[in-house]
Length: 109
Image 1 (cartoon, one colour):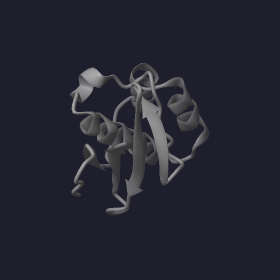
Image 2 (cartoon, helix red, strand yellow):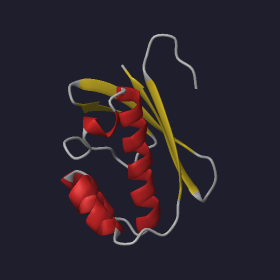
Image 3 (cartoon, one colour):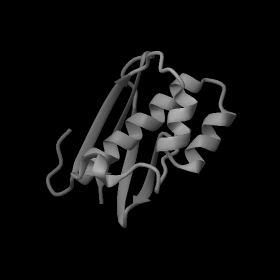
Image 4 (cartoon, one colour):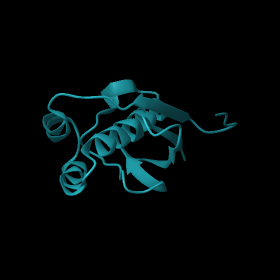
């Protein structure tokens, strides 16, 4: 992806087995994300959709993981939307690569 005037981040995650993904979500992500995770049937897809969207925003921020993960949230149920994180607005779009992958694009506005 290319942008002329905006910061952009992309993440692609291959869905695989993660031990104790519920614990990771509970400790690393927001309460809203954890609650959505609890409600959905496909836990693995939900986990990796959240992870890909979070990483795409972190990459677009240019700050890496020092940007933090648990004080803002993404919505794994939506395909495209806007979110505010750390005072900046981001456009997030889920990308379909394959049934075994979760992917997302984030553009800082």
